[in-house]
Length: 176
Image (cartoon, rainbow, N blue to C red; front, top):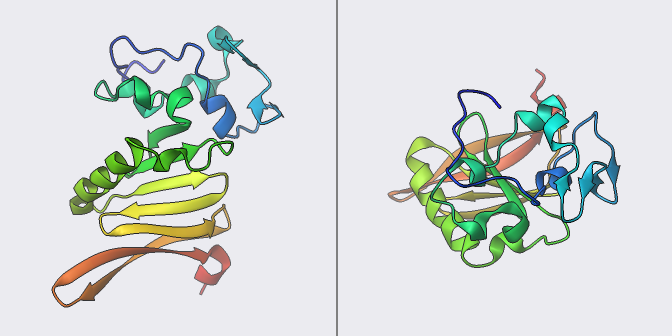
């Protein structure tokens, strides 16, 4: 573990391993959607010797003490992290595509989106390759979003209200 990372007291991966399902790593094979090292009731069967990308990864549940047991990824069926801009990324188990819309998750995500607005940060929900962006003003289904797209935000003004509206653009269309 990176010495600069401080885990929340009393939290451990244990049998969770949801990250083994929702993320793709080039050097790990998947079997029926799970990393080949996942074992039911055990979690990661090579946890002590897991690869570097896995060693460096900690979900928000492991890092944020205030997130209760209902936010543990194997309970809520999604993994939350921060991206470099400190926006919140939510990677949902495709077997439970609407998990993030259930209570208490959806209400909390909407509340966090409102708080993030002043910092121009957002919440990105991925269900497989499909992206929904939650902003303070609402949610936007952008459909399939992969490495061939860039995400852009524009500010729209209507009267005295402004809103951030996400949209995707093909990368080749960015070349002058």
